[in-house]
Length: 133
Image (cartoon, rainbow, N blue to C red; front, side):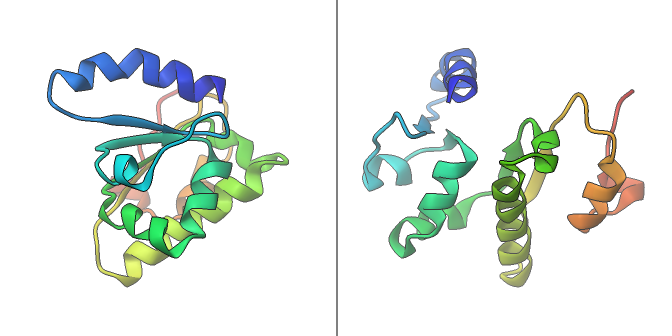
């Protein structure tokens, strides 16, 4: 939750000047469906996003997503990793089946097995995987 709040604090003013609405979905926040559906950028915890995706009404809001950014992807190896994994599967499988293009940006400074995760996400290693280090 603290990371979500920090990210919103850092980027919200930059996007407001372009007329974009940034919304937070965490256990500490409450947001109406109207507010969520009018958001251009949604930043939330994996647990709360998964909860929204399990609701039919709220699931429709996520159908227009074009970019999913998952920070701290190395947590996929830890206790909360199952939730991250299920979100990755949800977005990649649902959008692949609906023929919509979605870009997944998975970030980590410490992940050792980025090739394995790229294969898991069906990413073309030669032109879809970018790593630095």
